[in-house]
Length: 107
Image (cartoon, rainbow, N blue to C red; front, side, top):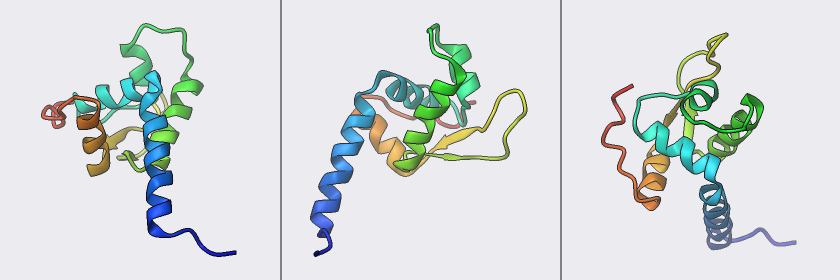
């Protein structure tokens, strides 16, 4: 079996990225993170009125982290959970969503 070429891996990544950003919870998490320096799943849940639970938001944050759009920043807080910050790829993803992360340092 041959290895996939860089082009094939890039196409697969692009497909995963589009699928990830199409999900409203993940897109909202990125948008919220673009407004502040860091954000945890618990904090995101407290900002949005929704019927989600913390576990669901944590799952979606992990998907974003697996795609290297966000990364852990600091240690988990017992009440707030693990804080995440945007990566360079995450800032590009926000631009793809039509959102600027100019307020990134305000959190």
